[in-house]
Length: 301
Image 1 (tube, rainbow, N blue to C red):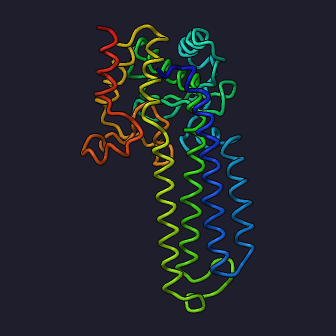
Image 2: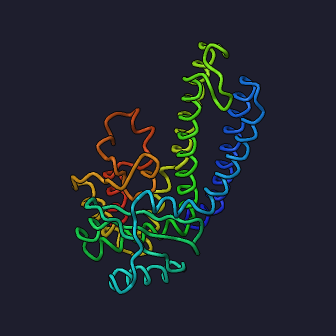
Image 3: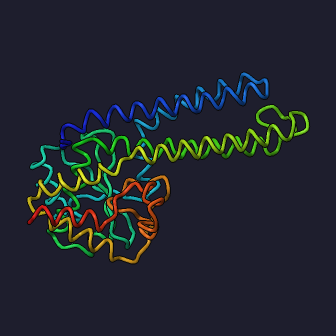
């Protein structure tokens, strides 16, 4: 049975596998394009880019995520009660005190990020602070600390950078194909318009597939595990269940979220897409809120 501790090594291995896949895909696409255009420089550029983005993804992804979310650091003097709750939960969980950030957004939500427990960050929205009572807030914070404890925040954060880079690179490549030149200054006629356009479509297809693969690698099981571990940490499952219920009832759209960062949050920031069909559910990075709430309340019975 998966626990807070048995998942740690598995999530670290998944992170390295994803980074290796990213390197292989980018280098492979770079090789294909360099062969088509007879330009070795494109391959060299792809190799350097993939290695650089892996390094950035591991060491700097948390800072990138905070910048994308518009999160700002808060000090203990700003909210002593919040710091007291997080400190108590951290001691109970045997974790270092994470840095706390605040997102100026009325939608209630939260996420944890960072490459390990010593460099962890928990970010919460203003909407979360204003809507939840103490028990519910403790439930949410315990959930996020559980993500830190089992280190699944590492893989979640790295994915943000890698997915963003894949989309960006695919866009550049497609534009190069479309205009018939990519680092070579040629035109579509010189290289065969049909071939270059076809290659552009193939590149976009590969990027879209790999982006989906990365998203699906963020297993929904991690949310169930964090819910269960968080409830064990507070010994009050109803706290988190009540918080998820309020989040589900809130009508605000989380402006701070985007497609690259959505999987990080406590609840899907694009909840209107949930549960519309069995096909949609296959591609969700979060389990339906109703299911999570039911599981938490079943623990109290």
